[in-house]
Image (cartoon, rainbow, N blue to C red; front, side):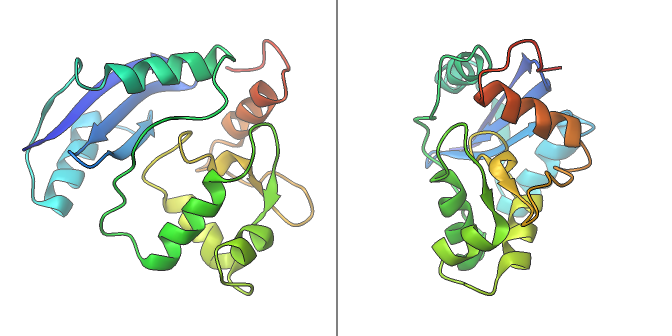
Length: 171
């Protein structure tokens, strides 16, 4: 079965979602050409991709609920095929950070089983193929500062504000 993809508008930009039979493979926001992102994923996974708006409608609904402030957790299967074991563990630990809260890279490293792997957690967060559903925006530096969030710190700030109940801050 080919990969499925869809696009949807969100307050932080157009989301591109790509899924396999196993689950969500990628969720990206305004990262250049959607087609080049799909092409990279297809090349890595050696699978074709087709439009799957109807099949991915549940994901789109959950994203819209999240941005409206009505969803605190996503009920979506993930397909993290190809990621290193520690990266999967780190992203799993990130998924356990409660809505509206933050954790430091070092805390996530300990939870993921690598007490001295804060930098590896940072790399996992920076390279995550799945934004928002894997809430890497909830991971902060040890001094409490936010960090970059893919060169868009204003988006990280907006997502954290959304989760803390501050209205009107999502761009």
